[in-house]
Length: 112
Length: 119
Image 1 (cartoon, rainbow over the protein chains, first blue to last red):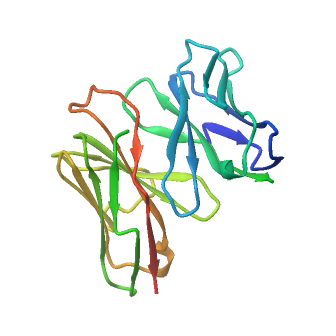
Image 2: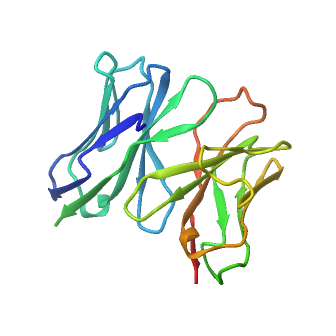
C-alpha cells in the first residue's frame, strides 16, 4: 500500500518557469514532510522540509505548501534552472521513530 | 551538513559471491541507520532498519539471511549481500539519523549509494 502518492511522474519545464510537484498522504500520524533531490547515480539530498503546524515554508527558490485538512503538500521551484533537472521525492515521517515513507518520485527536466 | 559516506560506490561481483557495503557517519553518531534499495526510475524501498548493538529490523519480503546487516558501532553499519545473484543487482542506499538513543528524532542524511552489478 502506497502511503504517499506523488504526481506527476515526469515534468518538463522551460528555464525560468515554475515547477510544481504534488504529494498526498493518508496516514494522519505523519508529522514531518521532507523533499529530497536526487541526481543520477547519487543518493538523495534533503532539499527542504515542513511540519504540519505551518502552511508554507520558503527557502530560496524552493517553497513547500502544506494543506493539513486535505492531507496534501507540494513543492514549488521558482525560476527553474537546467541544473534543477533531477528526480524529486517527497517523503513523510510518522510521529514515532525516524522511518521515512517515500513518494514515487518525479523526474524533472528543465529545458534551456 | 552531516556527512554519510558509503563505500564502495560501484561494485561488480560474480554470482554466488558475497559483497559488503559500508555506511559511515563521518561527523556524527547514529543509533539508527536505514538501508534502501532502488531500482531504475523507481522510488527508494526500505529494506531494513539497522540498530546499533542489536539486530536489524527487516521489512516484509526482505530475506534477512541474504541481506546481512551489522551495526557494530555508532558510526558504521554494513550490508552484506550473500550468495549474490543477478536479480540482486540494484542501487543500494543507506541513511543515518544523528543522535544517540531511540527517542531522538531528527532528519536523515543519505549516503551516495552503491551500484551493485552481479554477473
